[in-house]
Amino acid sequence: MLKKLLIFSILNILIFQTTASTALARDRIENHLSDLLEIGDFETTVSNSIPIYFQRDSPRSEESARSIAEEVNRMLILTGYESIERCQNIEVKIFVMDHSLLHDRSVMNFLSWESMPENIWGAYDSFHDQSTGEFYINGSATSGFTKRIFAHEFWHHIQDITCQTKSEREAEDFSNRFCNITGEC
Image (cartoon, rainbow, N blue to C red; front, top):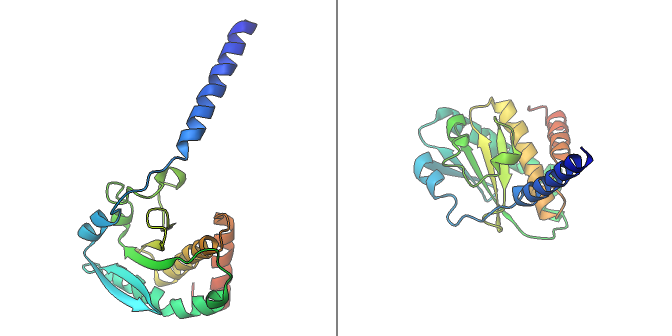
């Protein structure tokens, strides 16, 4: 009995260690945005030199993109963005899209879905193009909630350019502070 328990324990440790070491592995995908740009049919607006892409055939996506564009300058001021001590320079691109496109795993296959909940409102990624922080925002949200999502993802960008570990708790805290200060969410 003891021998079986020992073998079982060793097998569990080996399986766990193998799974844990490969679960975090991630490959860079060349041209990771090609399917998204082809299927999304995006139009672009620019706010403070930040391109904001929204789906041409989606009034909700366009409305959400305009809400974000209105907040970019306030976000830059509130975070002291221009004077932040950076460990790396990363440009920003914002993609606002319908819920169905954001959740289409065959198009958005470059995101780390295994570390996300089933239903997301936004995501930040700088893995595939390390010179660009890409925000992916669900354009199906209300204007106020879109601003909250934008604040949350923007904080992940701040964590990225300052080489801090990404923390969902800190991003959520920042989005709450942003909403309280601006009264917009």
